[in-house]
Image: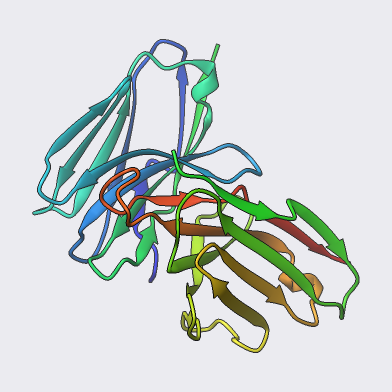
Length: 110
Length: 119
């Protein structure tokens, strides 16, 4: 399958809570990126983590990467209603090919 | 950050007609662009890799005669859906990789997508 896996498929939380999404991939990677997609729109890049990095922060986002387990997680802290969207991970090989996870649909209730 | 522009945003056409979608990198050169297809509530599926000045590389199961890709310049790739049918209705998204370091490490930038509806 071309696709990686993400869990959970859907996540519903209250505003102010933290949201954690996980992503697994199958091949060796050069880097992994997380994207956000609002319904019917294109993808917006959130954060990139290289294969030699284990953790990265950007504002309320925290990404971890475990290459031994071929997995990554995205943590959104102090969530807001505006964070409601679908979130995808994309694992990128040295050849430049990206494989997307199935995505997690996050709903943040005000 | 770098911008990738996609046009049109949405298009409705009759069955049997051909539709062209453009993907432009606005502030960086992209020797390689990628075309994805996304069905409702699903992830992105890579259709093909568009290479400037050469033939596109298609993923398994994607009909190259159906989805024509032309990457004539370093900033423009086009996807033409030929003889479109209702089953071709989908959200098509392009992306381009910035290898010049504008955002570092070959970050992939996406267009806003083009929603095709074939009647």
